[in-house]
Image 1: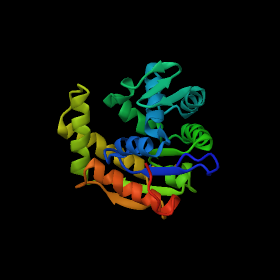
Image 2: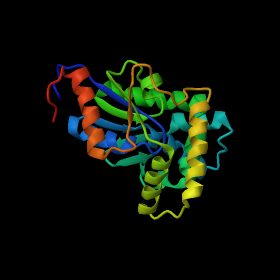
Image 3: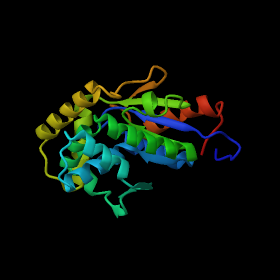
Length: 230
């Protein structure tokens, strides 16, 4: 797949929190030999910096300045903010909550989209987020809207939180995720939405391997004319 004569390929995976986007995107990138871009982690990094600097997310001007100045580096399994590894720090509940508030600010989104597009221009990528197929890369060759029912998404996030040693109740997490879903879906700038040409995939009753294979079939059909990938 990594033929230098081939045009770069963008695989865009959108969907709500807890649908399994990050897990699947990482696996797909590994299988395809593409670069994995966790756009949610980029917004979390900006939110973390805002929390540390005591910047109010309501101050859109200062938030845009932070987003523009943020030096964000992504590597397999890690994210750096201004030279510091913040992989664990950005997964705290308060950062997750802050990220969706930060993500509604038009200036912040413009800054992040510019950074995301720059990465996508350099190499073939698997990019996941809320608006990859609709805003960041509307011409992506492969678009998938990955979903799961609300109870399953809460269950997955609860397992992740507890595995990371975070103490949070199922009810509290469910309330946070419901609020985030509403905020992501109703924001004025680039709301969470399925692109018209995206394939809808419900992962509620599917295992990780099943979801991975389903998306690989889509990639084969749209990019490689049915040929086998790695």
